Amino acid sequence: MKRQGSCLCAAVSFEIDGDFEQFFLCHCQHCQKDTGSAHAANLFSHTATLKWHKGQGLVKTFRLPGTHHQRAFCSQCGSAMPYLLSEFSMLVVPAGSLDDKVQMKPNAHLFMASRADWDNELEKVHKLDTLPGQ
Image 1 (tube, rainbow, N blue to C red):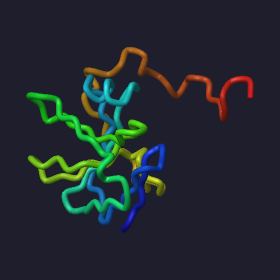
Image 2: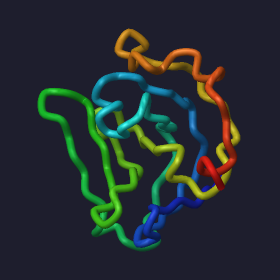
Image 3: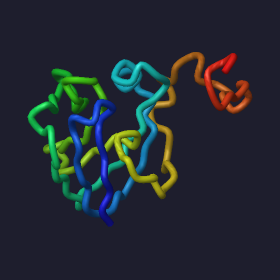
Image 4: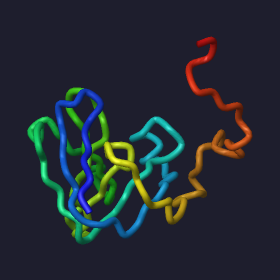
């Protein structure tokens, strides 16, 4: 299966060819810092391939020294981008970077012991379709 993806400013676009084996919501402190949110949402594949359509040179990668933690991002808008985690021969694709709908549901929440203290019972929080007052 082929899926298209891009960054927020549309300077980078890519295609993923193949299936994902896992979909994890990671609550570790590194992912909280990366996303500025409660967790990262990443798809993983040992067999899918990544093809850049445009902007590959704009994609920068950061590896946290002494860890397996890595992230790739558009250097213009900061959007999370796919990358190959070479020591595991695994493609990591941020779910939100895909333009196509993600058909699978997350397999698990990871590192729940590090979960943000405000990330509890969020299903009870009031839901709006737009900004307040619009």
